[in-house]
Image 1 (cartoon, helix red, strand yellow):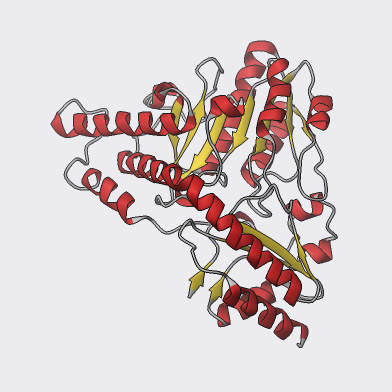
Image 2: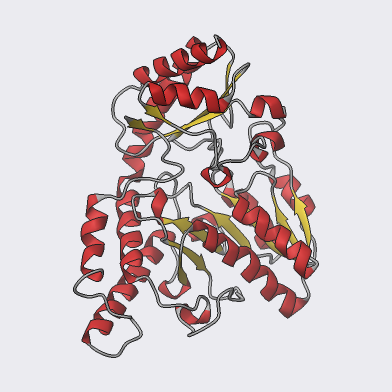
Length: 380
């Protein structure tokens, strides 16, 4: 079986398991406990925080460990916006219609419960955001600009630095969802010009339930969880020390491999895309053909059902997906593709293939399986 749904989740790396194991067994203590076992856990937590901060180009104290990307995005959007509302009366958020549900639903919550205005800046047919359009959406009462570095369904990569610079000139905090970008794209918050950045461990070889939000110290952040005041009062609850160690280890490994893997996988991806487009009738690439994640190739297949194609692919030993795993089970067409101007009936034919760093061989056999699966569906 060939697993090509790595944008949904990745296998845990051996090095990560080995790094976290001592903190599930011998040094399992609560890092708030003042004894040898607890202090060992506290030291490991501090070390993991510093390691994550180095990759993100932030200070160790900026890093808040979370249960994953969804919590990190919720904390960023709600926490920064509510703090801005409390301090300066700001009640406006700017985002886009192609964001992960954790951003869109957080913005919707703020509109429903806290009377925020939300502006969704449209994207073009490839999923790209126009910096000028963002500039036109910002207001004096804008509390936050939040958007994704790379889209989780089609892989389109935004020009984060150019977009963030516009908001920074206005003194507006910028949050970027880098969950899909981690391991493939540079993550230095200083180079990107952002104030907050979200990552998730299970996209880069750490276990599910691990993640982080890094927020610059100057940006006020209202906590979502209240209790014992862990994570400098920004996320109460006993810390997942083994998970933090796992996240730090996976992030460092992904960053060390990033440049070589990105270049190599880009070439394999492009050859795969070309072969699918040449051999599968009605195939159309979704997302930007150039500004896209190295490990993502997504298509629509006219006249088919995406779910039917996926079933045929699995019969041929290829596991993939129709888009975001967070929307699994929904009969609705992809909100990302619809926002890019794809007709709803076409959006329901979408199939996404996402690869790991370790792909090294041409994907010709996968492309042939795609052609055979689409032909089988069209023959029904």
